[in-house]
Length: 178
Image (cartoon, rainbow, N blue to C red; front, side):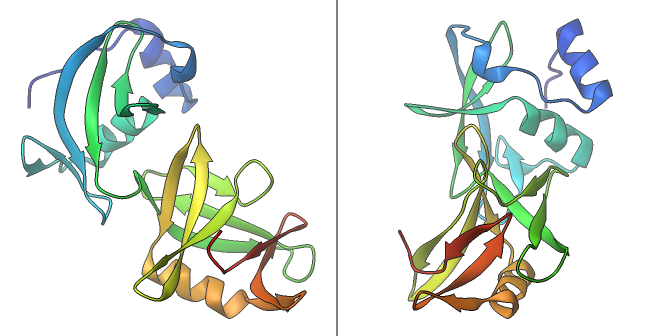
């Protein structure tokens, strides 16, 4: 893989573990990154898996969803990237304050913490007859629940107004596909 120089400002965001303001950057489209994110969350470059988790984390911070697809963006460049399903996986679920006022706190495969709430909706897509959970992470980017997280959600399911679903942050997220 060729080295990708990072602008000094972007390096600062990474040191602080902040997310850079990719939604504010409007560089010209420069081409294709030759990268792909597989349904299992594996990131590939030129057909080969990216083995370094730190590098995947770096790329995940500059990922954005535009009208014409997914892109990796810096203040100076914008490159397309193929995403087979969702760009992230929700690989861990913890429940804070179990019960009616619970908060479902997810961790993605790149280490982003996300709590299901009004700004981070949990919704379900029917795939092969089963409701598959997806969580809004940021800016139109979704995380598909990994199988263990799916089973945890199923264990937390309750009925509310004749619909099966889960509560988080005072919001009921029904399992039926919207």
